[in-house]
Length: 179
Image (cartoon, rainbow, N blue to C red):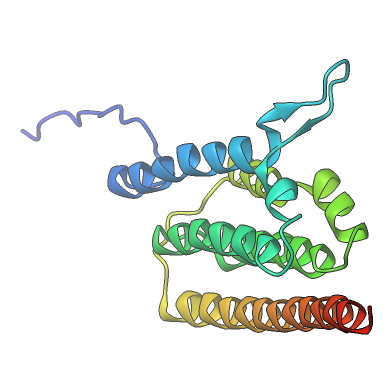
């Protein structure tokens, strides 16, 4: 006589436990980055918050580049934990927009106070509901290409910033020698 079928109640998980844990490790990293870089300080008497990103961006030549490198490191951590390409692309776009507009003197610094790319990336990560898959070779190629584009923008922004600093220094030395 065949035995009666036993039904097993199992809790359904979208991700295998080890993948779920890897991705959960990203949440504190992105939350901390959003806090420190975009929401650390509050303008007294208002609800307007800002972080170190726009303040670091005030350093000519190095500020926006440093902020982008920090954000790119978090992007690399996200890629290593298998986030989908489309999410990585959206996060990369936020970093690129912040860097590209940030290299414009004064206007770029004001933009960084408003745009808050790290907070946007944290929101993207929180809203993301991942499908159970690992990162593939094409994911790594995609991220490498995005990081190369980011690196090119960083190099151009550094070159423009150092060129501007050299021109300003030349103006000061030219004025000092004519007196």
